[in-house]
Length: 255
Image 1 (cartoon, rainbow, N blue to C red):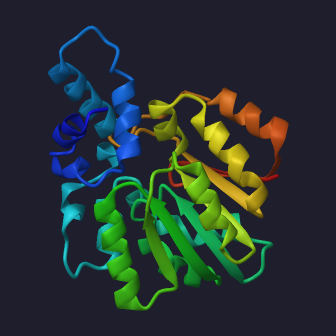
Image 2: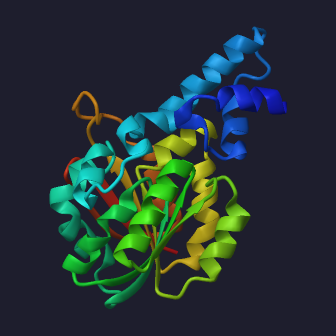
């Protein structure tokens, strides 16, 4: 992809701090179409909006001095978890002891839920990986202000080797979160979620994948069973827990 095309695509504020790799993968879906460059750019932006923008309120691109509850409620992916966070974290982290390292891939603003780890009785070292640079900066500012044992990294989830290097340096026991991430990865690259999990599973004590069970906008129940993904997990991993809370299904598994 030419540099000038990348610059045009990322002129929109919501895409302005996306890793080049994510933009290139999105653009490659339309690059060979027999259509104008303007149309390819429009289609690429549409795909990026489905993957990233649909989860992002513009109010999160520059808020100042807002509470962690305010931030969590403004992000479409986290607001429905607020009343369930202590129960969610108790359910997915139980049996690992009190001191745990969490690696949150595709974190969004989930780092603002850190106080709920404490409420659930865990002492967590938190590392988040996120493609939207504004959310990385927002969360890191919060961690610094509140003196939280956490950090956010601006990185594409498609950069598997770099993610593996990061995980290997983190203290055990390690738990990897992939909250509402699989569907987004599949929009950009089919079966990439299986590749990612296969590459990182041996580095974690457990992995947690979640899926929305209802449309976050229209509040309609999903009928998609994601059989392909569930069969992949059952064939290759031990399923520890599988439960639903707050319109979200959590599957906890290990190598």
